[in-house]
Amino acid sequence: MNYSIGLDVGGTKISAALVQKDKILEKIKMPTESEKGRPYVLKKITEAVDSLLKNVDKAEVVGIGVGFPGLVDVKTGTILKAPNVPGWNNFSIQKFLESKFKLKTYLANDVRAMALGEKNYGAGKNYKNVICLTVGTGLGGAVIINNELYCGKGNAGEIGHIIIVDDGELCGCGNKGCLEAYVSSRGINRESKKVFGKVLPPLDIEDMARKGNAKAIRVYATLGRYLGVGIATLTSVLDPEVVIVGGGIAHAGKYLLGPAVEELKKRSINRPPKVVQAEFGKDAGVIGAAHLPIMGGLK
Amino acid sequence: MNYSIGLDVGGTKISAALVQKDKILEKIKMPTESEKGRPYVLKKITEAVDSLLKNVDKAEVVGIGVGFPGLVDVKTGTILKAPNVPGWNNFSIQKFLESKFKLKTYLANDVRAMALGEKNYGAGKNYKNVICLTVGTGLGGAVIINNELYCGKGNAGEIGHIIIVDDGELCGCGNKGCLEAYVSSRGINRESKKVFGKVLPPLDIEDMARKGNAKAIRVYATLGRYLGVGIATLTSVLDPEVVIVGGGIAHAGKYLLGPAVEELKKRSINRPPKVVQAEFGKDAGVIGAAHLPIMGGLK
Image (cartoon, rainbow over all chains, first blue to last red; front, side, top):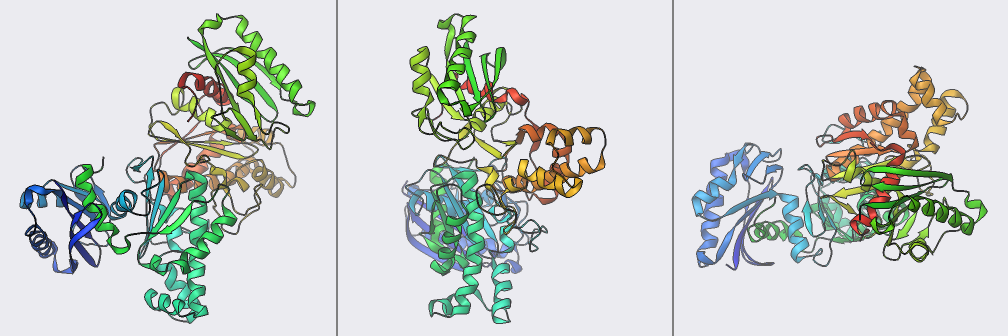
C-alpha cells in the first residue's frame, strides 16, 4: 500500500497524479472544460486514472483523493457548491470513482487538500499550527491547529472574507472590505488599472517586476501590504508558527511576500509567524489530495 | 479533593473565592490598590485565602488558580507583563502562594481563566469551538478549539487587535484600526463625546439606554456594529459554534449584542455562531481560575 492517486480539480485545469508520499511518479494535466458537461469531464478523469494505474500494482494503491474548489461534504464525498465548476453541485465524485475503480475515494476542498500537502510534506512539516492561503482568482484559506486540519462548524478557513476595511472595496461575496477584494485577481486588476491605466495579466506584471519595472513592483507591493494586514489579524487571533502562501498570484514570491512581511511586522501585536511560499507550488494540491486516502479522509 | 481556591486579579479589584465546580461557596472582594505596592497586595491576598481556607478541610482543597491581566508564563506561574497592575512584572505568584499555603498553584491570563469558566460550566459548556471576548478597558479574547484552550505560539486570542479598519482610529497598542480602538472604554468614550458632547461613564450610558434614551442606545449600537464586524472576521476564520461576550461594557447586553448580531448576519460568509453574554458575569474569572488546579493548569 505505497501509492495513491491524487486529483486536483480546478476551474480551468485538472491534475491527476500517481503519488508516493510527496513524490509525484507520474502526472497528467488537462483542461477542465466544464462547459462540455460533467459526463465529458468524468470520462477524461477516468481515462487519466486508468492510465496512471497501468504502471502500478493496484493492490499497492491505497486509494484516490480529490481536491475540488468549493463547498464539499467530506462524509459522502459530495460536491455541494462549486461556483467555478458549473454543473457539479450535489454530485458525489466519491461514489462515482469508487464504483469505477473499486478504490477508497476521499474528497476535500482544494485549499484544504493543498494545506494537507504542505503540512505533511512541505513548508509546514515542522510546525503544529499552520495557516495556508492561496491567492488566485479568489483568496482561499485553510487552518491547521495542533497538526490537524481545523474546520469549526464545517467552514473554517474562509480567510478571503476577513474584513480589513470596514467600508472598503466590494468583494465577490457581495460584502465590502474583505481581504479577497484586495488580494486576488480582482485586486491585482484594480491596481493594474490604477498604475498602468489598463488591466494587464498578472503573469505579465510579475514578469515586469522581475525585470525591475517600478510600476509592476508597486502593484505587487500594494497587494502585499493588504495581505500583511490580513496576516496581522490572523496572527492576533491564532498566533501560528507559519503562514504558507500559494496560488497563481503568490508565484510573484518576494514581490508580494516582502511587502506583506514588512506590514505584518508593523501591525502585529504578537511575534510574527514565518511567511513562506508554498513549497510544492502548483503540485501542492495534487500531493495533498493524494494524502487523503493515506489519512483516511477528513472528519 | 472537592474544592479549589480561585483568585481573579484585576487592575482595580480582586476576587478570591472558595469554589466547588461552578458554585461559589464563599467570596471575598477587595480593591487591588497596586499603588500601595506588591507586598501590601500580597498580604491582603494571603489574608483572603487564609480566611477562605478556614471553613474547609484543607485536605479537600485541590489547589489555587489565579487569573491575572497580562502576559504570563504558565509553566513557572510568572507574571511577565501586566500593564494594568504596575510592579508585578517577572514575579512568580505561583512560587509565592505555593510556599505560603503548600497548595499546588496555577496561573493563567484573566481572559483565558474566564473562558475556562464559561467553557466548562457556563455559556460554552455544550460547545467544542468557543470564542470568548471581554469588553472593558480593553478588548480581550480567548479561543477554545476542540474543547481545549488554544494558545498557538503562546499568545493566540489577541482579538482586540484584529484590524477592522485598515487606516482607522488609533489603538492603545500604537497601531491603527484595531477592534479594541472601537469596542472598549476608548471606543465608548469617543462615541459618548460625539453623541453627548462629553464623556459619560459607560454605566450611566447603559442606564440611560435601559430607560429608552435614543442617544445612549445609539452609542451602544455603534460599538455593537463594530463588534459585529470583528465577530464576522472571527467567523470566517474559525467558524465557531458560539461567541461569549463578557466584561463591563458587555453588561449592556442586548444594546451591544443586538446590533452586533445584526451586523454579523450581514457580513459573515459562514453561518453565524450564537452570540451570548457570559453566563457567570463578573464571577466568570474567579470560577475559571478555580478550575485551573482541577485541570492541572494550562500547557
